[in-house]
Length: 530
Image: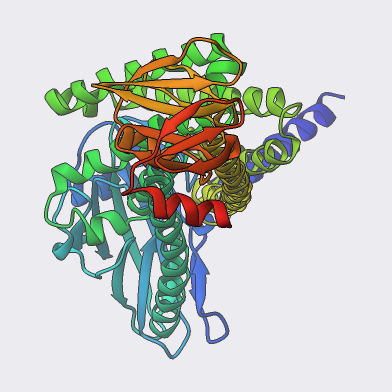
């Protein structure tokens, strides 16, 4: 019975040992004629140490089994340690020129060594704390040219050192032709992506300025700053913007992230008019905006502290980003009753963006490996989000243009109506005589007008006493209808009330006589003849 128990224990120990060896064994990368690209991480051993070691000291510690082995061979997450990756390669192909790529451009220090028997030979030293021109290959990621003789087994030792932040080192080995093919394809792809993002930002800015609508300006600034953030995250920022300023490069990526979040909140507030529809949540976001402004000032004044507090700030930034996404979702759901189409488009866009954010957080904290998510998940989510949101913004522009056209047509109709009313009013005004005393007199009631110094007396057929107004006879004659004729230097008569002319007098139908001047008599006779 005892012997059977011992046999079982021995078998169990052997099984555990076997699993341990399988889990931790690195094996080796065998290069052959059929494969141009090799993923190396599964065949590497990764060690960690809090100390900064020389290559010789690290190799000695590895061979003595005194360095701690890291289970995650690609993505250990945020830590304050240095990493040493042992990469054994045997070349059984005819190719001798290869490129080793580390697909994560945000690494401070990198050293690549070649193990030659007991000697550790340094091949390259680089990182984003060096100027860009010092890289062995002018590429957004870190890449190292390697020459591996045919039929030879070579062991490389890679040192990765990035403290107080996320570390990742996805390793890929390319044949030389495969590397440059990948480089060209990637350049075209990202050129298209960032060209599209830049075009969206520019067009939104132009529309916002021309139409004086701040929502398009905030959208343009959000797309621009988050596009710069992705540009920096993928390594292009250091390659094309901050290439000679390593210290500034360490701030460029997180600072553009903060600016993008600031403009994102401003955009969402105006997209959903949260000040009106969600006043409480809107005030919370206003507080966050204020904190963003304060932290940006602190960043400028105390840049060293920001770097030291990197892990804490990363956590805070993601908390704020998640809160912003919650704000976006809440606003969109609340806005469904007001504009369902725009809200649904927004929800689709932010669902994709949120998925990218979650994937990025899980990768940076080491919860999942980057191999599960191709490329940069946050950039992919952002790019799709911009495409979907731009679709919604185009519809918003079309709605605004339609509203403006309808308003323009309504204004035209209104102007035409006002013009007609003015013309009608003028016609009606012409049918009456408005005196300086503000009295309104129907011309048909006036028998004649008599001048008395600076005053005029209007004799009306329904009044015994004349209407008196301070005016001139010549001025009043200009506004009177055609049936009024001047018959004397101080008298104007209404022809409708004239009965006959005899001599130097004019007889009215009611029996009144008015003096007729020889100067005005011919015109009067001509008018009466008509």
